[in-house]
Length: 234
Image (cartoon, rainbow, N blue to C red; front, top):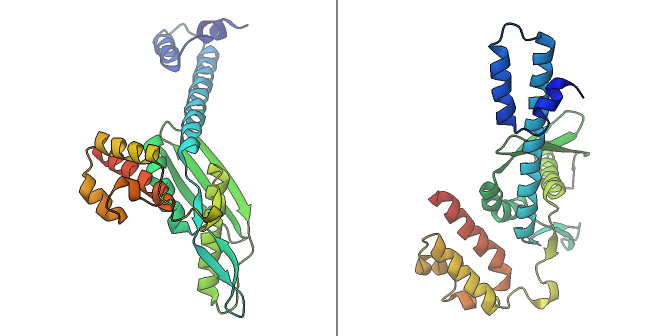
């Protein structure tokens, strides 16, 4: 083991930075050793950022709701051929939760049809997913609409890859319009109070008279609204 490695093996990045600062001020320090110290410090920082990223991702995935498939693809006869979760519904469900954990997304594409999504954490670590797609030139679409449909699909697919999103049919198990449980109503009431939310305004926005009357298919939306209120209050 080299001497400089032994010095920083059990140190935090900040401690290593102090060692480097002292070494840089010493004219007798070997430049190559200083460069190795800088490389070790950078690796420690990268490990720290990666650990923070995956810890935050684990917390995020535990709170992400299932997304209802509210979008539909029709066949030539106008009948529903397939259902999917719309990008705007995904955004409503995940945006406040991702913001709370410090995640953001950026998208890119190439002329060859390669679409990418970088998921960044506030501490600095980034993970990128890619997918190659053909242009979605469905019936009745012009070139611009086909491009837009492909981009929308790529965003939905890439977000799902990053977050392991689960989608469900709107009428799964016939429970879509059943009310939430008493425990869930208590949870919503308590968390809204914690962020200083107004119960009357919240219930009016959700479209019900009480927490106990909130439909099960609006639970994820209700949680997302409270999470957004918490984020704004910071």
